[in-house]
Image 1 (spheres, protein in one colour):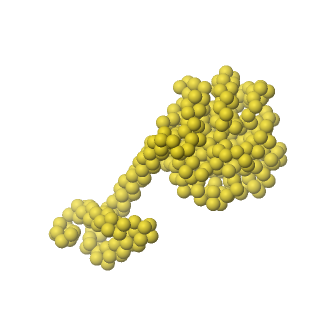
Image 2 (cartoon, rainbow, N blue to C red):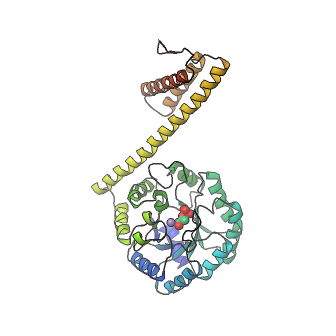
Image 3 (tube, helix red, strand yellow):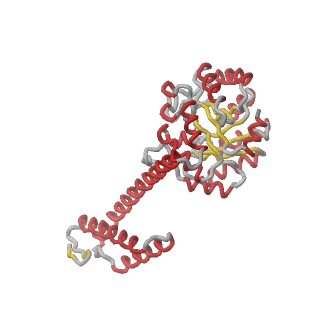
Length: 366
Ligand code: PEP
Ligand code: MN
């Protein structure tokens, strides 16, 4: 079965992996797996055996008990099965249970100390085993690259990548993780031969937001999806809001795999709106940050008795905006007007903070 997964890694596009966030009971595992096996586009099952929870006291997976059910499931189940491992003991147990592939979660791929013994253990047992490496929670390309280099150094031969977005504060556009597609694209440039799947579930955090992300990943030419699906999401013990039922998954995959229909176009519209929301929020954050810095500058100017409007500095920034506009192929007048607006607001804020000052803004004495 792991040979099917190796074949699919190399040849099947899109590669679709689906399954529950966590194994919660024998019944939930078997009914979910059987339903997913009926979906013809699904090539492998993902299951959570050990769950890295953000806060203590939450359901942390069933561990060895779940592995016993997986051994039993494997007797009847045609698809390869993958799980997440975070240390060498878990890797040994998962391999003893005959699982066909492993993934390294975002809380583990961030940690070189954890990765070295883990990769060494897997490589000693089976260097051909498919191992998927998720991007670390932190938006750090070098850490993700480092995780792959460590896996290669350990001798693992069948690697793949999973992009799941990065942790951010505050949240962008209601998403659980920020899409930051540039990070995924940069990683592709570094490892063009490694397949990269999107994990839209942990990026979205909510079923309603999955579709736009799935379409975005298609636009960015990622190689497939690893998506959470539960036989009865409302009853799920972990990640309830983001797990889709097998029926919902079938619908999502129908959209994902169809080209050029008006349904797809409408879904794309949603995708673009979502991206606009992300960018607008970022614009607002950046402007607010700029104004905070402007206020710090105002305090210094006041203490040091420096006039608010510095003609030379103003001309320099104006020139830089001109260069930015040219470099990004943006309308020069639009960028000029935007700059004037931002600069004027900055001066007004400074004048407000340093009210004993007089400052010339657009010919007016404030
Ligand atoms: C998971 O895939 O179940 C998971 C915990 O994801 P991540 O490591 O991306 O948070
Ligand atoms: Mn999950």
